[in-house]
Length: 504
Image 1 (cartoon, rainbow, N blue to C red):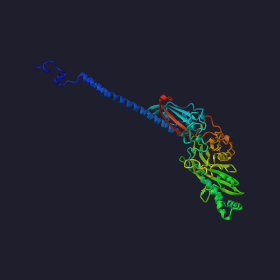
Image 2 (tube, rainbow, N blue to C red):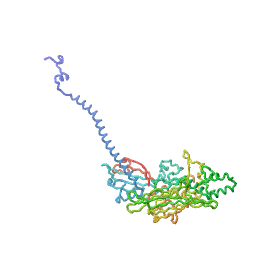
Image 3 (cartoon, rainbow, N blue to C red):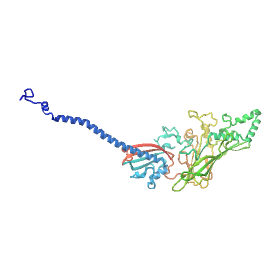
């Protein structure tokens, strides 16, 4: 037989494959193929496993975020006392979040408990179940950044809650007595805001009284004003565009006596709210009294000719806040007004309440200040008071509050006000106390027996001392932190942190 190798008698692997066309891969080729496959498959498998882990972690993070958001929304539905009560006694009702989701319990943690003056409250939730996952949660509610005495290291905030550098030279704009906090005020129901148009109408209405006109024109004539000029000279006296006219800033340079009475009437309405409770009608009357050379001008509530009057002016219908457990009712009543600094008698503020509901009363002084496009005061405004002028005016200003209530309950009554504080503020006064303790009184009632608060929600030293553990701050920063189960307050176990703010 002839050799296939050309006579050498040896057969190569190629020759053998040609003879056996059904032969498979050699061991070496198989090993090479397996290695190549492993190089391709292992990274793909690792990518799949990593993707699966990432998906699981993402789902956990999403659930933790959902839990944090649910807690944040639940907190905003209650005030601080209600929140603390729920964490202290959850068996009596826990509504910040569905209590069935919490297996490990809730409580108020240190440093908030027993030390409310610090303005910091810390709460915990253990074993919080969310869509099959379990977490721990920490809630920090911090009002220190808005308080007049802020602990060292806590950033100061302005009234829009923007941080400002704590160099010690800035003022706390949110707590500035010149700013009336709006809270969740219903501007259409239970609120009166005195505007410049009301003040001007009251002054012009007085000048249109014929008795005053006759007396003033007689004085003008006696001073040598020509008969042909008397009418114009008289009109110039109440032309607000003229700096020589009579303004609220200089009333007593023209009138002998000036006083004012603001009366708020609260009565039960014929209308009911969605729960069937009678609503409360609010009406306000504002009378200015002027005397000139023995002539008493009839009380002026505005200018009939212009149709601008504050005489039994409707201020909407107030919804009663009813305690489901006790049936006690409260109403919010808000008054914003300009102090009558030139008055020869204290401002009289009278509240007649026959509604049967307890009063949450807010009375806020306003500072007259017209500003230019850049927000700076216009010094040429005839009514503008410089800081020294305002400080002096505030030091001598007095207001008397009279509350005629058919069932007045001192414990249920509350007054939030900047009366007793100098509107010029501590910045101008060199950091000294801005208090004016004698600035107001409540007729036939001792201030130290009433619940009195400043506009930033802190108890006024002029009123009754708060109960132990009472929370009175108005606005808070809120931070909700979600941890892995069993990892409460452990930064290495922290999953999600969300922040926000809430009003008390």
